[in-house]
Image 1 (tube, rainbow, N blue to C red):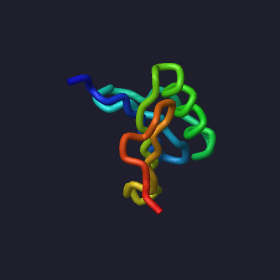
Image 2 (cartoon, rainbow, N blue to C red):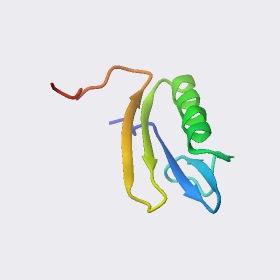
Image 3 (cartoon, rainbow, N blue to C red):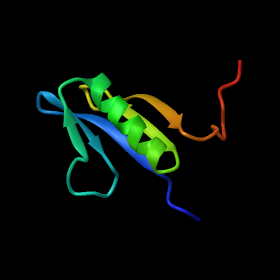
Length: 77
């Protein structure tokens, strides 16, 4: 089974980092959370789609979003 393509937007000091799980350093750093999310979405679209996970300043997951391909488990309602 293929490894899922995922990017995480997480706080790092006073900046926001776009991270790929398993890598030793951030893909990019941004001054705003929105800027980091936009960069992560662009990367996911360029690599065939995947999941974007956004963390809050407290480290808890705030939201998840499937980017660039149909969501296999769309929300109902």
